[in-house]
Length: 580
Image 1 (cartoon, rainbow, N blue to C red):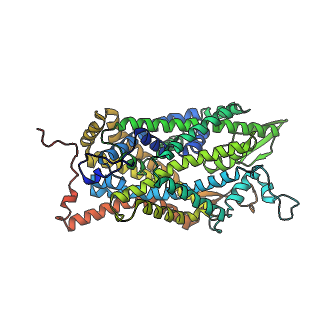
Image 2: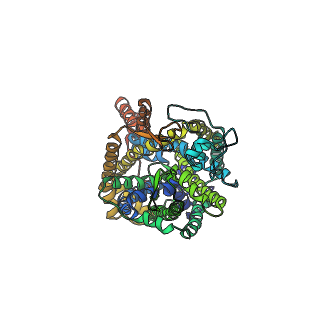
Image 3: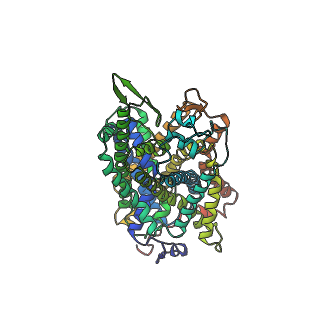
């Protein structure tokens, strides 16, 4: 973005940076949209519902919810050439809180997202050992036997829960900071900062956006040659019940979160485009590549899980606790269910155990964790951009402070706050942030984004802008989605999500060696004060939306003359007033 736009109508637009080329922009958007969820969340959903059944509601959500919202964000950012706060504030002063909410969500998500990258770094550093440290149990203090916790569980579980997290028995026991995780977290934030200030549009974006596809292809070729791979793929794509309403709910939320909508990062990226750019084609391309990546990643993942299931079957394990599934021997035939796991369970438990059985396990472990780090790093660029761009666009940072310094301050503050995730109870808190920050707030923000464009900005005016940028007006499909289908789907998903979550008190799995049925996880209920924090994490990010609107209304009522100009919609930069 070293070059500068020329020919814009305002001094702000004249000084706004732009992309060096179209490939740079597309790779950055794809890298932001394609993240860790494509590798460990989508395969999990396909497995529990059956790929044949889950893909139907998933594609419906992609067409009627994901793509229209993605198109809207890219178009409005490119049209108004501002960050998330500037865009919605320029449409209407009452909507300034929408951008603030996106910025808060991006900040909070970046906190725990980079912690996951710290975990990935820890495993990456340990992947060079021979043998892999999670392949066998360590000796106890007497040096005569193995650690009992590891013997009762598995070496993979022990390395994750004890050697990596040093996890406490429950969330109320905070534990101490784990110095190795603190160092990895500092390294992760340092890498993000260095890549960001050097320009995410430089060589880094080409590496972080394309390298995961190279690794996935390598894994695909290797996985398909493993014994039992076809069993894993058959289990992945076997259709199950489609009438379960939870299938549709999970499909809608997955496509929404997978595209990184409502974070503000996509709006910021598109604001650096030239005015005349086909944002419709960009939206369709990014959305389809994102969904295709999810499906592409599922194939090697479940081929490897099928290999692991076959290996366990041959060894006739009586219990496989890597993902809490049981192997039963009946008349010399060992029947093993293919394990289902999501998130950290897939990346740091199931997959690492499968890697142990593969020839050249160190190489595959290094490749896997490098791939995860590349996926997470490209998404972190978008999260950080969603925080910095709005603040810089609103001139909240003094001119004499370099952007590099301000970026460093944001990274340091984020690192200090994220230290909570490096304590013994850190994994419990990370799951809370993941479940509550990245759910309801994003749905609410997206609903207000569509409402802002349709009701405040005006569909006719928005269509004029798109015609200027792309050379054609949006067709009837996009208009129907923006004006009816997409907001209705958002409301239905939001209400259904709240109902499902409110039916029972939230619980969490705890790793407690003192539990009677250990090594099974003990399911515990959140204490009331923790549940209150969960509610706050869902509500606080969206509070700026009504707060800013109320503040603007009070200002208008008390100082009508001062705010008369602010209440006037911004002029259309594409209107030729000299032409009659």
